[in-house]
Length: 295
Image (cartoon, rainbow, N blue to C red; front, side, top):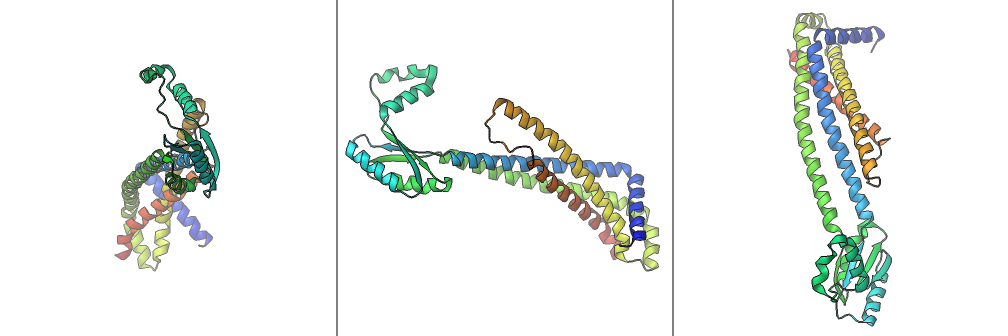
């Protein structure tokens, strides 16, 4: 694009935004709200994924032995567990130790165990740690099949439920973002259409004297990109303030909670929002000019 043409395009964009200032503000506001909601859903999903990864890395297999298991059988089970690929550590926990831990977890509610008297219904068990989280499922299945093992459990229910929630949030976020993107496209295209209508005679003359479609299209296309750009900037500022307050609150109360740090994570999210805003703005302009340039 030549320098003179560039000056013309920038000047027309400035005059158009000033002429339709209220519609421009409405477009920028709609883009900002849409991208803010999209950014929040993106942050929530990515933090939930990190939480799942953190839980998976801490997953421990609890192997409960049958009551009739002898000392020799227990040693054989331990040896076989250690022989399974991917096992990092095996720790034996006798039923007395298990009962002591259970009472500690109950705290002030230990009286609930008074009805048991001296009986101890808890079984002997092994605590098994694997090297990699993705080995937990296969290792637990192999251990559960050993003679003398009653059952082998790990936190699969918690992890699977978190995955289900993450998928649900992601699907809901995509559906909501699609609706908001449609509304944004509608408002931006109408903003550009007002400019087109105000200048339709001028545009007709330009086409009559031989102006190309791209020469006519550039000011409107740039106007849509500018609207999307400023909307995405507002969304990023609001997202930065919101996520900053959330992280500060969480770190004050739950210092070890697996939350993604503010930097540089939010800059990547901001870049995504910026690209989305400019693309939506360009699409809105394209839609509004489609009929005009066909005429």
